[in-house]
Image 1 (cartoon, rainbow, N blue to C red):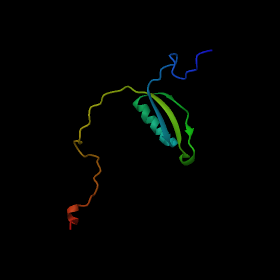
Image 2: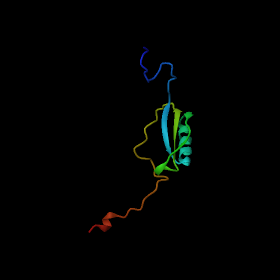
Image 3: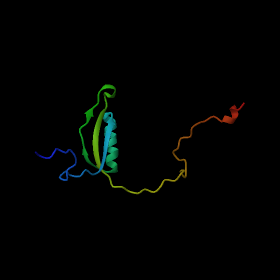
Image 4: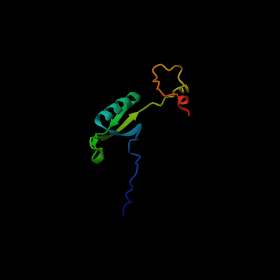
Length: 99
C-alpha cells in the first residue's frame, strides 16, 4: 500500500512572497484602496472581486498581494511646529459656566 496522502506545502511549490491583504468594501472603496496600496508597493497579484450577499449586499471582497520594500521612516515629532491648516474647535469656556 502507498503512503497516506498528506496535504501541506510541497518543496515544488513556488514560495509565496509579499504582503497579502483581503479587502472588503464598495466598488469605489476597493478602487481607492488598490490605488493607495499600489502607491506603497507593486501590485503583484489580485483576485477577482466577489460580490457579497445579505447585509453586505452592494459590497465586494477582493484579495491582493503586494511587493513592498520595507523602509525606515523618521519618527514624527510629538507635536507639530505650527497649527497651519489645523481646525480649531469652538469649545465653550468651562469657567464661565461654573456655579
